[in-house]
Every structure is written in structure tokens, then in C-alpha cells.
Length: 453
Ligand code: UD1
Ligand code: CA
Image (tube, rainbow, N blue to C red; front, top):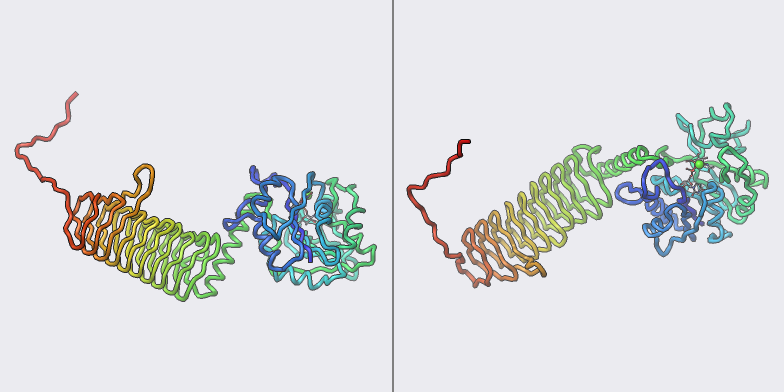
């Protein structure tokens, strides 16, 4: 089958310079969701009709399996489909989707495709409480579809019809060309309506069938920021309930946002207000505290991530303790049972089994061995103003508080670094390293007092 996705409209009501179909839902453009769903149906041709912001849309969703047709002027949905015709395979049916209707499920589309087969014209319809604004499905006394009438062209009687056109249709392709060519724009909006094809099909003796979605939200489109926010909530609720169904404990399914994929093992629990971005994997028995942001990370079994932890790329082993207020950046790799505590930033660094940095530290471009204790306020000075260098700390090193390690530098196994040391030369195995400095105490010191004015 061919799939055509209409995405040429401007989306004036979004009040934004960004083309409507590029506004993100769950962190990805609306249109990307539609393309994903289309791909699950394995179309022979996948064509996106672009117009407003065509270049931006191409850049955002371009892929080898996606072709673009340009509709310079938005003369209506029928005219839009017409622009895609030269790119379609006439021997198979064409399914029309909308770039601003992101949540339609493949199962619903399959039902429509099954109903239409290769010879019939199929319309996805839904009966709603408030049909205002939509095209209405007009049926005859036998219940057969006679036509679709737009809100602005409908009589009072027609406006009372609650069954609406979702806009999603499937048509035999060979006949579609002539039907589209015969459309007129003598209607309230002066547009070439795709909906008028229904009457052409009936005239040609082609049966018009309908199918319904499992849920109404599958057919909802985005025309405004309000609708975008509403669909975001629908999507997040769906994701949250799928996690619950899979056995994940969520403190509140209304307070989790997944903008990408979140894979969870058994007995994972997630507290409120967590955001997951990109690809995140949580192994068995991981617990995530409240208010964490976790992106592109793999968290090992039994790891505890405490409140306000921010991970933007990183891998942890098993039984790691992170946070509260820890930050992992790309290239952070923590061994089993490592601890990274409050206000500790780890970037492009490996921490060995059981290594601990519990307070107020920066560990960048480093290799930290097993069981190393990183004292509070330790800084790896990895940047000389021009280049980054590596710090290597071997197993069982004890780093006293307030230490600076000026890279490149290597501290061999078992070294003890006294508090307040600046280490800028390599240190040999088992040594104690300190900077000589004297502690001076003076008697009779008088503190300044505030001057009276
Ligand atoms: C359309 C249907 C209406 C249906 C409703 C469902 C027609 C005439 N009407 O109305 O029956 O109930 O969708 O939401 O089809 N587009 C283009 N080029 C154009 C015009 C539109 O690409 O020239 C795209 C838009 O970007 C949008 C989609 O087609 O993604 C629908 O267009 P829109 O103007 O929103 O259609 P409606 O008037 O809502
Ligand atoms: Ca319109």
C-alpha cells in the first residue's frame, strides 16, 4: 500500500515560527510519530506532502524511505493528496494520514485497511459528543455513507450528526487520480476537499465503508498548544499504564514523562516527577527517587537513584547509589557498588567497584580504581585552557578532602593523599602525598569592628 501523510498546513493557531507538524510530543516531532506508525504498516511508498516550512520539515524527518511532495499553496486536502500522486504505486491502495494526528494506533489503521480491501473506499469515522468543526458522515436510510459534509457547508440538520470524519481514508489509487482531478472548490472555504471524493466513488459504483478506532484520542489532531498539551498527557498516560501493566511501580502515573524509550526489569520503582529521555534501561530492582531527569542511560540491577539526580548519558553497574543531587554526564561508567553522592559531577570517567565520591566533587576524564575513596571537594583539573587531560587513580587510593588533581597525572595503588593537596606529579605505589605548608597561630589578634558613621 501507499501512505500519504498530509503535512503542508501552517498551523496558525500554534502561534509559532516552527511548522506545526514539527512541534514535539514526547520529545519528538508530531510528524515523526505518524511516520513511525506508517512504517509499522510496511508501505511500498511513503510520501509526506510538505508546504509551510518545507525545508525544516524535510530536515527534521528526512529518511531513505520517505519521499516528499511539495504543495506550494494550501488549496485543500484533496489538492494536497493530488501533489503526491506521481510518487505513488497505482496498483495498490493509498492510505491518507495527517501529520498533526500523532496517536493513531496501527491496529486501528489495519482495521480500516481490512474493511476497505483493495477495491473499496474506506473512511475512519468516530462518533463524538461534540462534533463541532469536523466533517459529518451523512448516511442514507440503509446506513450507507452518502457523503461527507464540512461544518461550514452543513445544514442545521447535518450539523446534528455526531459521526465525524477523522480525515484518515484509504482509496484505490488508480481511480483516485481522476476523482481528485474532478474536485471543485465551490464551497464555503474555497478549497478542494478530499472529503468530496466520497461522492465521486459512489458515482463510480465503488463501495464506501467505514471503520472506527478503539479510542477517540487516536483520531485527535493538534491545532493549538492546548490540544498539543492534551495529547501529550494522553500519550504519557498510555506510557505510564503500559509500565504499570509490565509490573513497574509508579508512585503516580500522572507524574512521569517518558520522551523516548524506557525499558524496565522486574520490581523497578519510580517516584514522582521523573523525566526519562532518549533510551533508558533500568535493570531489576532499580529504584528512582523523586524529581530525577535521566537521559540515555543504563542503570544496573539494584541501583538506587536518589532525589534530584540528573543523568545525561552514563552506565552504572549493580547496587550503585546515586544522589541525592548527583550528576552523571556522557561517558560516566560506574562499577558495581560505587557511590556518587550530592553535588558530585562525573563526566567521561570510569569509577571502579566500590569507589565512592560522596560529596561535592568534579570527576572528569578520569579512571578511578576499585575501592577508591574520593574525599569531599576533590577536583580533577582536566582542562588546561586548551586541552583536556586524563587523571588515573589506581585501586585503593584514599583521596583526602579538598584535593586537586592536575591532569595528566597518575596516582598509583594504595596511595594516601592528605587533605588539601594539589597533586600535579605522578605518585608511586603506597606513598603518602601532601603539600608542605605550615599552620601558623598568632596570639593577640583583634578582629576588625564595624566603623560608626
Ligand atoms: C479535515 C476534513 C474534515 C475532518 C477533519 C478532521 C477536509 C476537507 N476536511 O478538516 O472532514 O473532520 O479534517 O480533523 O478534508 N493540509 C494540507 N494541505 C492543504 C490543506 C490541509 O497539507 O491544502 C493538511 C493540514 O496540514 C492538516 C490536514 O491536512 O494536517 C487537515 O487540514 P485541515 O485544514 O486542518 O482540515 P480540517 O479543516 O480540519
Ligand atoms: Ca481547513
